[in-house]
Amino acid sequence: MLHMACLANIWLIPVENTQFVSSRGNEYFCEIDEDYLTDRFNLTGLNTEVPYYQYALDLVTDVFDLDADDDLREQIEKSARHLYGLVHARYIVTTRGLAKMYKKCDFGKCPRVLCDGHPLLPMGQADLPNSSTVKLYCPKCEDIYNPKSSRHASIDGAYFGTSFHSILFQVYPALNPEKSMRRFEPRIYGFKVHAAAALARWQDAHREDMTWRLSDFGIDHKFIEEESESESEEAYEYGEEVSTAKAEKIAGDVASGRMDLGN
View 1: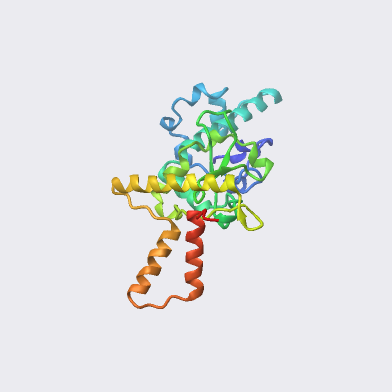
View 2: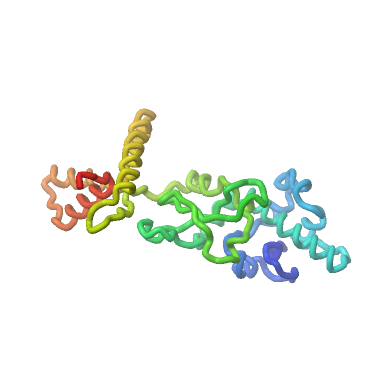
C-alpha cells in the first residue's frame, strides 16, 4: 500500500490512499500507482537528489521496518515526502497520471473577472526543487497566480514541473479554452486613460502581427469575438435574423477588443 502521508507534515500512520489524497494540504496531488513507484526505471537519478533514499523509498512503498530513533525517523519522513513529490512530477505527465489529474479538476478558479471563473491547473516555474513554490495556471488568460491557501502556497513547484499543463492540453485538446480579446478598460469620466490605452494599442498591433505570422504557417487562429463576428455576418448572408441585443453585444465586444482610441 502506498502512503500519501509522505506529503503531509505529520507522523506517518497507516491509512488508505484516498484518505491522504483528500486530506488538507494534499489536494493538488494525485495517487501514484504502486507499480510505477516500484519500477526503478521511473526513479532514475533520484537517489542523488534525496537523502536516505532507500529508507525513504521503503517508507513510501510501505516496507519500512527500521527501528530508528525519533530524529532519524523525522529525517527519513522528510526525505520520503520529497521523494514522493519528485516522483509525482514524473508520474503526472504519463498517460495514467494525466488521466488522474484530468479527473480531479479541483485546483481552484481563476481570480481574473474576465475569465469567468475558469479552472486553474497547478504548475511549477522550475523543474529543480527548492527553486519556487507551486503556482496556478489559467489557460484562458495564460497567466499564473498564487494559491489562496497557505497550505498549498508552501508546496514545492518542482513536484508538478513546468510541462504538465502543456502536455495535458496536447492529450486533451478540448480542455484548452478559446482565447478572448476582452480586457478591462480604465476610464476617467468615460474617457480612456492614455497610458493604458497606448499599451492596449501596442498589444493589439502585436496580436494582429502574430495572427498573420501564424497564418503563414497554415495555423488559423481566431478569438471568440472574431468567431462571433463571422457568425453574425453569415447569418445576414443567409437571411437569418439576428436580434438587436445580440448584434449590439458583438459590436461592443469587438470594439472593446480592438481598443478604438478615437476618443
